[in-house]
Length: 178
Image: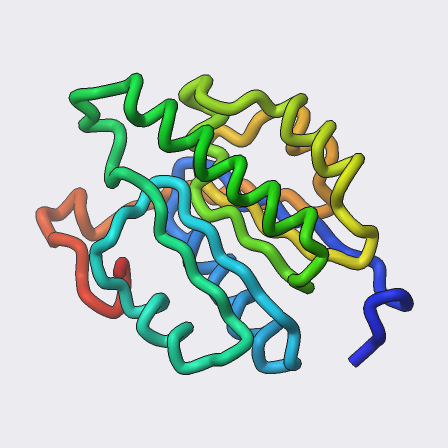
């Protein structure tokens, strides 16, 4: 494992309409943890419901997990609260990044927040340029990634749906979707 000062951090953005953005990020989480990296996952949308990936992360002492969202906000009854929660989560994420404690920080679903206009892509990039150490890896997930974030990132993948089980009436499957 390279020492931090000898490593070039990579920023990955997983966006698009298809399934697999968070799942891909969580694969990176466990890969990094397996190499002994200190990892922080911060979820912007998902609330306090149980997921398999969170249960698996609890098995590692080098993964810190924060599910801080209000739930699926596309069904929101209180957009002001969603904006407030998003701003609080972003402030928390800034603290974690600026602490320089973590080798990898995953901001799961942050792109949705930019797409909804709750966070500004330029503000995010300005912060990263000022406070992110060059050795830190980042992964951002969610639909509608901000143009500025896409331009700043090193690797951007757009997930494209071909078909989905939900379209056939199959509900979210434990171990596959959560």
